[in-house]
Length: 198
Image (cartoon, rainbow, N blue to C red; front, side):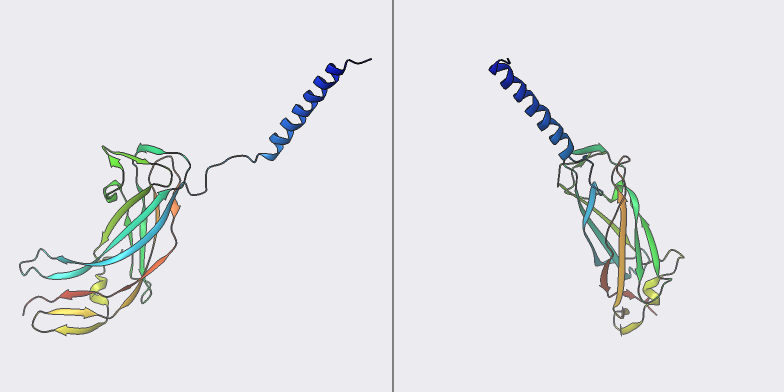
């Protein structure tokens, strides 16, 4: 006849074994998120630059601001290796396109970037920015191709009609992290440039 304490011990052992296998079956395999680094905001801003010609003329250019986060549940820290490109195009003409390369030089404050090392805690933001002078990939000055709507004789400023600008970014921040792709954004661009004096 079996001892009661031995029966209890045997029952507990069986319960532990059952629970162990149930836990093993119920836990899904862990994997990092599809986008370890994710772009959360992509926007364009029109700015004015002064040319280096003797007249000091001015014209529009575009600044692109790229914000994102560390979408991983652990800190990312490594030598920064920003690669990727910003694709830009106008709805008005399919030839008005440009591809802007991204590098470490595009990292901007307040990103935690020091001595070449980029550190991102979980959900911490990073910031990049790049500029475009409105030259297309084939060298066309798109600003001068836009339809003009007004010219101010006193200053020589030519204002272009608003055009829809679309853009999308593909980027990676570290050599060991896969590239992420943003959604396509659009921007109502209104440009201007200054004619040389007669």
